[in-house]
Length: 435
Image 1 (tube, rainbow, N blue to C red):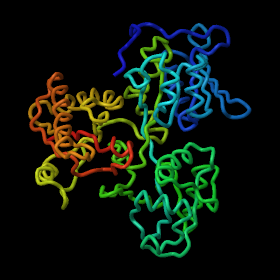
Image 2 (cartoon, helix red, strand yellow; image 1 turned 90 degrees about the vertical axis):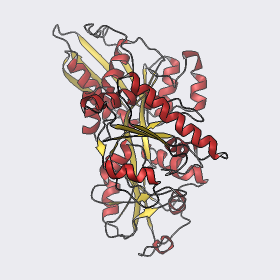
Image 3 (cartoon, rainbow, N blue to C red; image 1 turned 135 degrees about the vertical axis):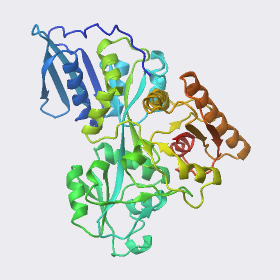
Image 4 (cartoon, rainbow, N blue to C red; image 1 turned 45 degrees about the vertical axis):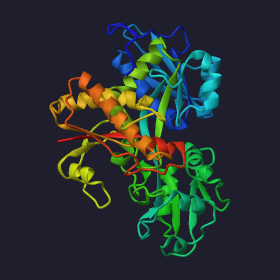
């Protein structure tokens, strides 16, 4: 977790004239609603009264102004100009935080290398989880679809429901508008990996609400939309290359098992000492900040114990575990060919420890299950899955948690295909079960 760089009693500074104390630039997904909500709540926690929001004529820039007890203003500026623009602004020193609906690209990290490691804890912070739901009319009997089929449908290559084993005749496509983050995410996550482009026949919707309404009125329709807008539609389960089909839900998104889960990030300069940037990063990870994440339609990084029904195809040890224990809703994931946690899991591990302490699960009530992405050498996969579980066991032990058992299941029970880095990352995981 981010270490505190300022004393707990130190007040955050006010603005010098009309200059903002903090500028955030990046994704509209974050900067439209969530970032302003987090900024306003942080201002109020710090004693700045009644924060007011002003929006530029083009709708891209918000200025949030609060005042302290002495009437001194504090101003934060939030520019929703796209994730790429945020990284460019960080490089140009015109923003202190980047809001990004995707991980930093390798090319961007290279351009920013003089600042330090942009993947280091403190620089890369996952603040929320989100998901795209693939939705159809509630009367459609189709239950699941593979990523390959999904790409072919939206590329216009699969044209009828009968080709998917359903019925209804010609498929009617609905997509979010080109400039939307959801559109870009769908292209990058679904179409691009299959070498396809969106069909020109797709009907484009300006807003998520309009797309959901259109699909709800059209029995032959299929579309993609943020999970929060899918409640009155049927959201299809997605299964890939032997992986179990998974439908979007708060639980499957929180565990990142659902294939179209995406992480939402704040990026800062590594080891930043900027008081407002650091303060907002800390606040976004707090219980109060994560409550705001949920209130604004995203999935918070909170932990709960979930029952998993034993099923055919589970290894015997795993099936026995499912019959008597509950799985925590957060999985810990790892860097490639390594037992080192990725940046999100470094943030999640203290949450796991706090949950186990609050639930009094410290004495032989925790089982760790390690998994890996399939490799040419199965023995290597089995070894890495065991090393990952043992690494977590050591960290829990340092915090006073005595682990009951450690299981190593290699490449069993994949939650995604192994033909992309995103899929391999999902499969490199340690599950935490509690009795």
